Image (cartoon, rainbow over the protein chains, first blue to last red):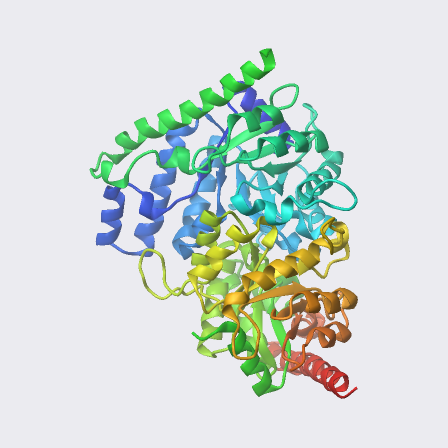
Amino acid sequence: MTHFADRLIERAVRIDSRVIVGLDPEVERFPVFLRERLRDEPTEERLEETLFAFNRAIIEVTAPMAVGYKPQAAFYEQYGTAGHIALRRTLMLLRDLEIPIIMDGKRNDVAHTAKAYATAWLATHHPVFKTPNPWRADALTINGYLGKDGVLPFLETNREAGLFVLAKTSNPSSGDLQDLELVSGGTVADKMAQLAEIWGRDSIGAYGYGNVGIVVGATYPETAARLRRVAPHALFLMPGIGAQGGSLQSVTVAAGPQGVGAYAASSRGVMYPFKPEELAGADWRAGLAGRVEEAARTLQTAVSKALVTTASG
Amino acid sequence: MTHFADRLIERAVRIDSRVIVGLDPEVERFPVFLRERLRDEPTEERLEETLFAFNRAIIEVTAPMAVGYKPQAAFYEQYGTAGHIALRRTLMLLRDLEIPIIMDGKRNDVAHTAKAYATAWLATHHPVFKTPNPWRADALTINGYLGKDGVLPFLETNREAGLFVLAKTSNPSSGDLQDLELVSGGTVADKMAQLAEIWGRDSIGAYGYGNVGIVVGATYPETAARLRRVAPHALFLMPGIGAQGGSLQSVTVAAGPQGVGAYAASSRGVMYPFKPEELAGADWRAGLAGRVEEAARTLQTAVSKALVTTASG
């Protein structure tokens, strides 16, 4: 492995993209063909195969535009063992393709337990067998509510790995806590961004960005601009464009002087630009490929164009 | 299922205990006998069997003193598929014994994703097969950093289930964010407790407690007393007694007028009151039983005694 932030940025520059593609399998959104086959054969094996086949189809189409992939743990956990195995296969495929993986788990706990989460998702080797860890991601989203000692174990487990700490999330009620003003100045989200900036200080890479980034919803452009000033060395992972109504402006204001500091994360928008019944035949992959490629390409182009306009404006 | 808070309290009263026993398997702390067998046969199957055998031994000994069990997701995730299956078997055993399960996952995400986490851990049925969900717990710990719309999906998925929202965690650096004063009054932890109180308002049960509780480290007795005033209808899940140095006083100040509102959660203190090399023979269960029973009984007695002293003082 190499320094996560450097690796992500190098790929972003090489493929001229700032798009992170989510991998959030939801069977009810899958092509009807897959759903019917699953209904006819409702087994763990068939479900696992279905989840992986869908992910693989998405990855095959979007790989040229994806700076990285972001599997969301919840969507695998909900499917029990089938989800667990489908995730492992997905991670293996992504490692084979050498595309950065940002595991979206929002994990958090006290130090001793955070260490176990870090072992699960970032360690290079299995804690007992000492064999390569099939679940290893290149980065992990975490919730920093517990403060420094709940974060350090992640950094210590794998010095090359990346973290994205929740600062300002994309959802409507993120302000319930995150927008509250602190007596010491700034909001809760500002404080979290400030802490992430501090936690990442020892890992600044070749492009000036550390391995501790932050999650900032693309739904709040003004907050994004403010947080960029608070955390100048943090990569921004920005969900919310598409289904949640986020804006390209959020990404451009956070992109930094070289334009490589902010990444638009899209899941539903890229994965499901079709109605299930539109893909009812055995040739679902072909129908999906066209639609998904267009959705990913459109987002890639829109972000790149917005960045160029901002840079020249 | 019945109303989580009522069910927990009824059991607490019946067995005269306020102890929640953690189930955090860590192979390096296991009896040497188990570790050597695993070293001789380093397979997924053996690891799974080892994890489950250890959990079962702990459960068999502590069941009379345990108001509930709290498996910590991280310690299973770190062992990959073996951990995944061992957890499922552990949850099945606990449901057979009809002892409440508080899954400690500290999950959190935007509404759409929170729904998937709720499906994973609280839904009665599998989302595809509609068969009973083997991963179902009775309650789940969650991180409320995302606010209301990240919490409601958990409540909506299973109206009987319980939630414990992180307010003040037990770790040394919990103050990095949680102790900061808000311009609107109180600390971040206070605000989280207040939100939990609001979220639980519609689920108040027979004892006056709702299904939304809070996590409050037993390491901060003054905070516990303050949070009890902020959230009078929330059950308190209080880790930190034992390995982390928490106090019984924290539990008594949060126990409420009937003495049923606060629960001491202990993991390492009850699970590992021995050195691995002390249990090197095939009769490890007998050696473990005596030590673990004593540790659990001592904690149960200490908490009960402290509660009685407080009530009569």
